[in-house]
Image (cartoon, rainbow, N blue to C red):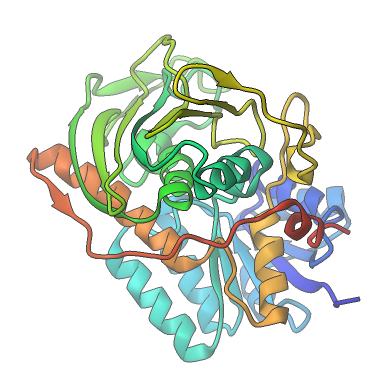
Length: 372
């Protein structure tokens, strides 16, 4: 049996629990320690999951840790990931990986010089529904994908999140906060993007917090909250992407992909599972049963296997292969999103300078190979 990779976590907010909890499910890594600028937060998580609570400096120096998961706020991702690499550890970052191409290039060069790995969420595209959609496309069952639509819209986080400030600051907004799930899934389904064009707006200059303990407090909005984009893929597919936190309700499906001979209705890529539908030229096609383990509901009403990308990276390090949630994929997704925001300001087309290979599929056997 391959020895588990020792993992540390920097950032002990809400998402940290998922990585800590799923470590027992996956066979390739063990979370051994955690750190946070707020040491009390680290101590609370450590007690909850039987880990060591450490300072960030001590975690970076720990001999039993080979990979550190960066769960800090997006604005801190670059600096924290850089410190991790400089300490001789590989890094797996929450999304978005970085906020600029320059940051991504610097981290890539640093990792290559040190022989280290960089991985990044989202890993939800490794789930059953999205991998099955990939298999249908690759098998030509709907023909070449010609166009499609994606919509991720709501009314923001201020009604329920206790500290929603960063969602409305540069580095967040619907494109960089929720967009990574959609853009990354589109890339793994259709390949790299060639150019984008967009329109954007910021209808409200401030938001009022509706949750405790800061109910009634107003926060400034410094990033666009409605962005409508058109993505031209190198494959020729044209995808309309609508993102907004200024919408109370809508009936748009998450993702529709229109092929030469049929249509794919792909569920929300924020989750690993969900109902996938496919049609031929006119009629819905019944999909046979699928035994992919990352489609099994395990978290309320959802299939939640966050940590699958980290597990795959740790396995890939031992096997000497490329991991699926790799930095080339993550950086291309970042450029797509930042190009959308830039185009939204200028109204001009933006041509992408990066590219990437589609990650290898994660079929049921590959997924089972990550499970304890």
